[in-house]
Image 1 (spheres, one colour):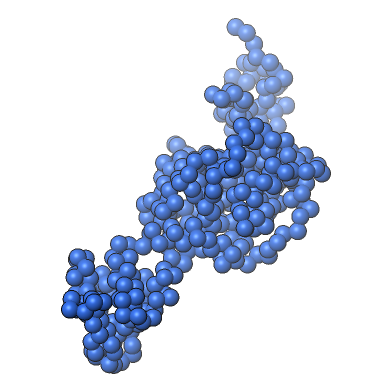
Image 2: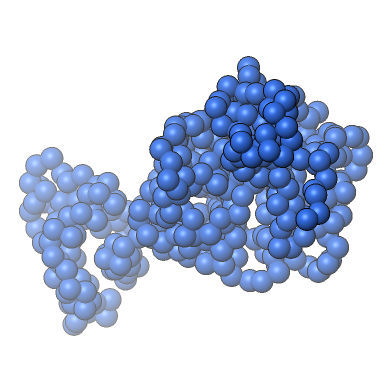
Length: 401
């Protein structure tokens, strides 16, 4: 049997466990570095009884991310975070600049801040970056592959199912978790994603092993062809940065390779660039800066059907009668909705008014003007005076929902 190359074989002992370091071939070429649990007796048989004394020994594992002053060993603990192999050097990076401008558009400087924070402050929490577009050939996947090329083995590509899996040891301790075709449209998916994006520690599970708590600093970059409902995002949610990506004007098959050659120049630039923002939230950016039309579109799509029907009904009344606001009690709205073929109960209407729209009723029963269906009128609504603890909603409020 042919012997392997001894120079390429290496062993380490972490705690009381012996590992063999191997390069496992990948399906698409190249290798991935793996640690395989080894046996002391096998090592003695293969290399002799004195070899074990030469094996490097560590007290345990740790995860300390750093891209500038990387330390493979921290206080006798083996660092699981991987070094990136780029050496920054001064130069131009026109392709990377054009990609960042394409992805972040008018928020170009914020996009540069995001990439600079990833590189220089890897433990800083950052918003969930969600890139959406129904069109093809937009460069979304190219941007993901570029991030993978920059941060190398500290990036993992996940599927939607990976988020739902309990066995997450593969992606704990990574800098970036990316999903190319995200569709996490269940409430529990979005809650898990939000919690992971802000948590400082996480209990890692691996098959057949005990749960182990580690520091969690991963950032999420998601892509989707669904512009309406890729994930559930509620009104007022500040953890998402949603960008609508337009198609590329030209298709350069060598573009990714050009990006890779520019990485050293780009990292040199990031090391010396002044951030355009200061830290204004736990996810660095002021949430107001990250509000985009693409985010508002998803929030609108997430609103429940009844809320949409109620908003459209009240806006229709305002437009037909020529007013800027409408006052109503819950008992006024229910028959109007029934006439619009919407079956509804009073408790559902109350939930929308109080929980979704955050409206409060008048403190006392007072006289107010509301509207009822009137098929004899051209505008279909006629005013009626009533007494009650009424709510008032304006056209401006409904249009910003």
